[in-house]
Length: 352
Image (cartoon, rainbow, N blue to C red; front, side, top):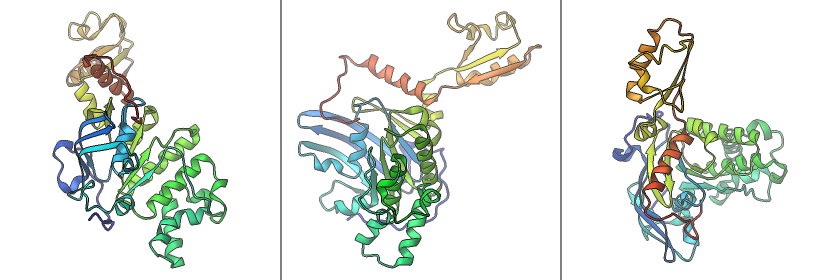
């Protein structure tokens, strides 16, 4: 039976991990050959991935690609859908969470989930946070007070609400309610926290504050999995991305690893050289008619090109740009769409 493992302080995991060859100690979860069907319609197809422990992993993809469906598989929320059928395995502590012996309630305590729209209970801020603890029979006020402060700090909300803990949670803004729900989730110390499109409907300030919470969870060693199709806000706060489309995993890795897989060029724009780059046989091959003042250079040749540019007299400045997450994502999506033999359509019942 799956039980909640005791929380221990761990050194921050290295980002230099091979996702295909993680040790059991490095894995938060392992997904093996996962297929999901709504009736006769297949929504996820042979998904295989390892989720590293203590890091922030993002499922990204267009609306309807299956990322929320995959997220909900991880704490068996799809059990609530009558026509849903799942094949394959999701391993936690070496056990398939879909094994008949698994206590689903215990699993959901261990794998918490925050939904797209905040759902605080009609209670005070304080009582929202301690709700799960009270269900576990914890009554000691000192313990409850300690967990409330610790959880609200972990959700980057303590300073905003510490003087009104007994006010209704409904008096908070949408962004604050979202962070309160996260505080309620982490109060029972889940091993993995799932965040489903958590910034939808939040204004820019609330979104910024939300990602402060994600950064705090990461610094505390939590394993966080979020799904989003809003990439500019995500890029600076995640360790790894899993790119999905039409229910399939297209690519996975850190942004640097995804850039390498995509083989997208580095854009280098020199200033002050006028036409000397065109006349340099070591450089002019990287110029294109579309970008006549910018060199598009393969990553492995970047250092040599920079050295050559620095050898030119008159160089005033250099602007070097690598592909961002949006560009990498669009690259893999385009490859997938071009390789499809028939036009892709959204599968009925698939949630983004």
